[in-house]
Length: 439
Image: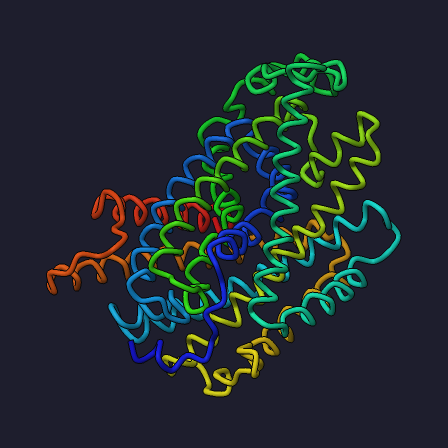
């Protein structure tokens, strides 16, 4: 526990902060912008992709939570790989996750620029990216408690918005389906009633592109769940982690999965998937089409704040990961420097400098969707590497605890089979990703 004793981070985060920081990192770009991409590639079968990916994420989060409940330290991913595996794996785990958060932050700011095009189509995306970059990075230097409160309310707003969208969708489907022509649950397996593909059997069925299409979108579904692991990053700043971490883990994974599956189910029932364009922001588009312009405007604003929340979370988690690496001698000691408020100042500064790359990226690649796709490919590959390292570290952790005859407080269900399943699934998707983009 030497690493924990040397940490200058403050334990000011409560259960509600932990849950909503994880919500904040997950419910954003992947749901609001990524849904159209996954649906265009797999049709309604994307619902199964979310279910399968969500189940694997649950097992992975339980593995991580079991370890951090026992050792709630800074830089949790790299700490466990370092302690129970090897120095190299600790460095690889920490630096790969840090890289994920930097790239995810760039993706989040790119999506913010895309959302602002709804109101200001003539403003270049690099200008809006620059504006919000300055705003969020200013917030990152506040106290951890202030960060937790800001992220909590950010997340409350967007979770409420998603729940409201689901309820409004259910109302339209079962009480007033005339609001949207062709709105019916049959859209999940039947050809479209309206639109350019109306009556075309090629666009019918739950698996319109077969198993191949279904497997193809799993990496994007994985990207959608990126952020839940913030539970591990917050460990060193959580009050009473042995109680808070287990409770938050079980609740946040289940609730996130339900929001993803519920919103996608309603969306694809209201509007046939063949009529969606991959660059659409689905629910905003639907409210716009039925004439609820103010609702569409408000929803787009909420979605924009959701993306800002994701970027806020990326800056938080990347700076804490870098701080944890410095504690393990895996990064320069300068990153151990904290402000009087417990903020790792130089870690924040470096992360800000790197995520500033979003500005030249959007300047030189004027098509935001093209820029977004390039970023997501890097993110998913790094996520999968991180997952593999977490699972193997957990297996070595369990092996050591067995030797010590020690029973953990929050054991992973179905171990060791759950670990084997997670590892096999992750390696399979990683290989699929390589084949897709390089062969």
